[in-house]
Length: 591
Image (tube, rainbow, N blue to C red; front, side, top):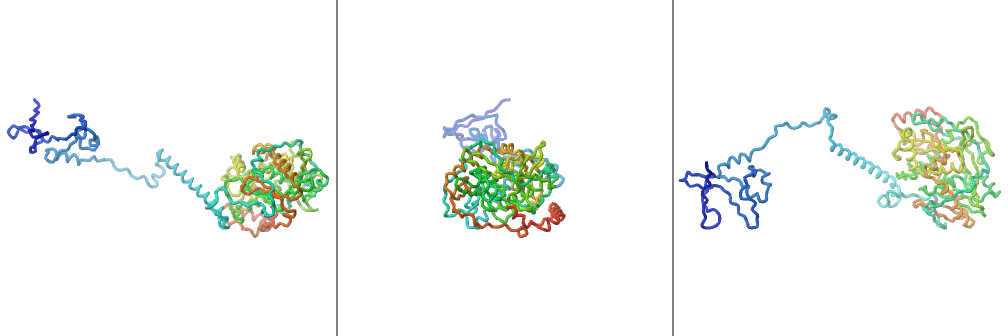
């Protein structure tokens, strides 16, 4: 067997094969013995192209496929197709039309109740679902913030202000606690940053000059109250509470006439000064310089008489005053709760601890709340002593000795604002609830702690009081009562006692340099600073104060059909005296 190469034709007229008619693909000898190569392609090459090989016997014979065509480059010249005259063109056409068919049946869609709980998404799908869930939560949070933002600035925009478009989200339009008059002269402006650097240690312990009033014993059964065993908050409309300013106190007037000290104040006023760097809302203190004496007073129905709610929170409260969740409405509600709580947790069996003198503000035969006033004196320096009227609310026996305590209540109005539901978290995550309150009400808790330290209380009880329903601001329940030692609690909330006295000492030294007259110390409603104004002698004497509406004229809570409110209404019907009489004087007595 031999391999016949065939005859290579010679072209005498030029380069390349001669022009000859088409011949069969295979070498043929049927035409008289001549042999010619048929259908051999000629690819013209330029001199710049590099020839890789003359013939490649290892190439893929399926040169018509996409994989062979995609090789490209130098080997592309060997990829040629048969023309119509070739004997294998028909077979090649049949091969090009051939397609591989998958014989497996298509998968059935997994829908319906049968597949709903059987299919398990793979890990990438689960990750995508988690991402989508986080996106949905972020959208809900953004929508909630925008809704609160628009609600907060709606009244401001309707009053002619810049509205939501021209004001900053975190800078709500707050009002000053007192209207600054044109005739007032600003004497000094003190930023809070200077207060944080002050420090002063009182050299001697305080001295008790006089104790007035009477105290009832604390009921220890309230220490066992929990969200599953809650107590209904009662109302004590027959007991009177007094918020008398410094210069109207007959005992302080008597001590001032005897030259017992040079500076006079109350624990509420001193605590406002001591905790000034933590305050956000505006407040004011009236300062009177009479001879060589200073009297720190508050105006009638001042902001200091009310307890702020969510003062240091990032969540914005509604501006509308008639809204039950506005800052003013919550302050009135918190004051009302605090007063009733301080009387409900007592034994109330008629057994009282009396002191040197009776309540100096009560008339004969008048029923007053359980409170004792301790008139205490501190020495600031050789020439300056300060006397403050401090309050304690109850007494208890601790290891055979009587201990004074203060009673205060935190109130929950809507878990959506704080983000923590007390009924679910108080038993299992009490620390988280307290941490949330320290974040939202840092100034109020600091002032309560400062007042307990000033009064020399051995214990301070904090009650957790919540609304029966978030839209019912008249009915409340006591969920828990927790006790703390004032010094330990001050350390826990980072309340520095030398810094508190340093602020008071700096304000006293500054006022001692002023001339005789009347001045007012105002906390700026927006900036963290206080200003001192000189005011006329008759300022604030005939000031009109808007009285709160009686309770029967206020907006009542909406009627609810759920079981919770139904139980509330049943409990209210079980107390005919409370439900029938209403709360005509509840808000008025709270302030």
